[in-house]
Length: 118
Image 1 (cartoon, rainbow, N blue to C red):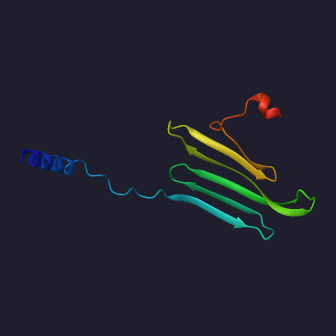
Image 2: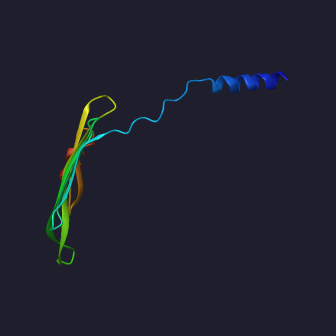
Image 3: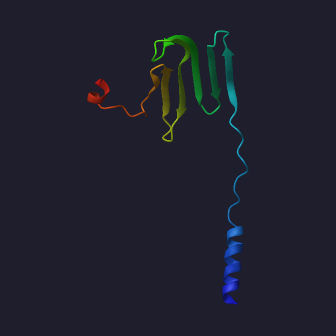
């Protein structure tokens, strides 16, 4: 009987604990743009009330594949920024082209000098 009373007391104590806050308000978008160009390029940007920001452009470029056949690709270039867990601003710049995706920023590890030259 004592075990049941103790168990019920623990359940009551857990139920009386702090009530979680209501679902937080969604973060508001302050600016949002998306323009598509007829040839396939684009401009894209947004900014939120908590300081997140992204800007990106894409343009069509003619490249040669492994068989030297031309085809069109979209080259992307842009950046995004936010405040990290330490309260510091972070900005990442990136581009993507026929050589792959490339990103730079203080929080992205850099290859050792000898590896980067190879």
